[in-house]
Structure formats: C-alpha cells, structure tokens
Image: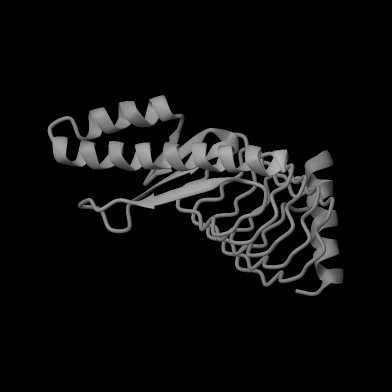
Length: 197
C-alpha cells in the first residue's frame, strides 16, 4: 500500500470516528513498512498482522487498536497513544516507545528485544508449557506470563492458585521472579552510578 492510498484509509477512518460515516480502517496483513503514520488517528483500527517495521507512528492515536501479531520492528512509537491496544504477539524489537502510553494494553507474548526506553526483563521457565516465560516491564510495573498480565502481587496470587498442589513449579516461578527483581535493582543501581560519573 503506498502512502497516498494509506492517507485515504486514514481519512475515511477519521471520518468514521467523527460522525459514523466513512469507514473503519482495516489494515490487517497490510504491508506498511516505512509508512508515515505520525499523528494519525487510528483509534480502534484493525492492524493485526500488519507489517509496520520502520514505520513512523510518532504521536499516533492507536488506543483500542488491534495490533495482534503486527511487526513493529524498529517502528517509532514515541509519544503514541496505545492505551487499551491489543499488542499480543507483536514484534516490538528495537521499537522506540519513548513517552508512549501503554496503559491497559494487552502486552502478552511480545518480542521485546532491545526495545527503546523501557526496561524489559524476560526469563524462560522450564515448565510443562512450551516456551513459558515471565516478563517484567519495569516502568509500567507490569508482569506477564502466558495469558496472565498484572502486578507482582496478582502474579503471586495466580501462581498460588494455578499451582496450589505443585510446589516444584511454584519454586521455579518464584526463583524466576527473584532473579528478575534482582536484575531490575541492578539496572537501577547502574543508572545511578552512570549519573554520578
């Protein structure tokens, strides 16, 4: 999809948001590599499985948007509104999320590799589930594992309920949590040392 076609889709979507006329944007599976979507209002749009690698999404309103399994590798999402967006399974490797609003967003099964401006610590856990990991997004104080997303206390409650009769798995989860918290504190100490230099 070229930029002119994309601009038409955005214009129709914004009209749909304003007065119900126009058309809701369905950009699922679209090839939007390097697209300029800066400042676009794509609230509630469907961008699932879209290739948005290297896209400019600065200050875009993507609140409530469906971005499931989208490729946002190296996308610029600085200042973007992703409140309540579904990012489950998205590739956010090397994406810039400086100042992005991720409150209430679905953040499960995301590739966080080298994401910019967030401290993300992920640990693989050897359980009965394939590819099980715990992820902690420090600045948001959000923990994810499998279908779970919430605070540390909610995660601990979930572990206690889910694995009530399996002390072995509980110990594995708590060991991973302790490791993550230690790493998060180390990152904080490192930042303080660098600021003093």
